[in-house]
Image (cartoon, rainbow, N blue to C red; front, side, top):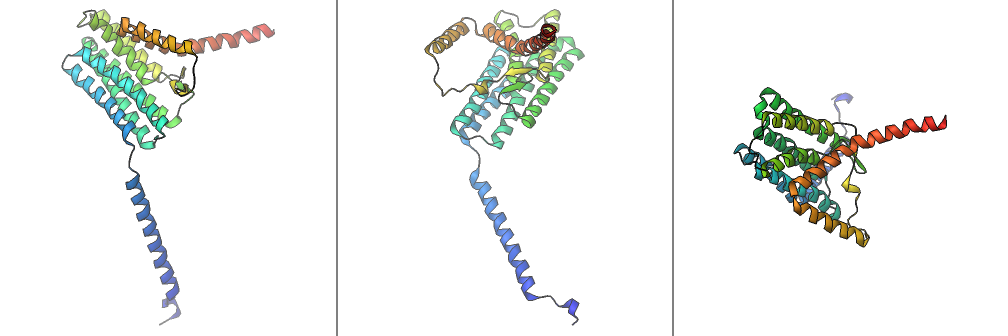
Length: 272
């Protein structure tokens, strides 16, 4: 046998031992993934929001628009709760964040567009479903940007629950006042509001983020009194008050940008 055909026994043993070591490390790592699993409580809450969005879609398809809008409102409450619970319990995870985004896409992207289309946009024909699709596409882009950039101090673009609130609470108000189906003019206004809400989601306007509010810190007593008064006002006419809150919040971004532009223009004039 030539020297080239001879293989040292020690090198073969070393290679086999390294292979066995890597295989054991991969097995331990895989077992760790299986044992780690997912956190139960925040993901159960997210599942509830997903179910509420699905229920809204089914209700809208059956012509039950009031239950559909209320279901989306409950999805908003659950969407706020799951993040809070995860942060308080220290159970935040990448899986939970991705699952929450998929749930938001159904509850605040597809569901509001389908409810709006079934209630009034269908009267506009092609324009109606185009307006609904623009909203769905903007919601998807908004959530994709949120996942890649990450936002805590402020939101870039209108949050999808607030955009859904503009559409759903408008329909809720109309249904409460006996408007089962809107006129052609009403459907046109709904189409404009739907497209407007979608474009605000993908805009560069900055919005206040409720994530900055620390619910575990002490607050003045008068703050609690104001919260109680807020609930009292909400109970007077829930859909109208909720719609007003969503409209004011959605317009806060453009007005904030406009105010900053006006202030920046005044500074050079004063310096001159």
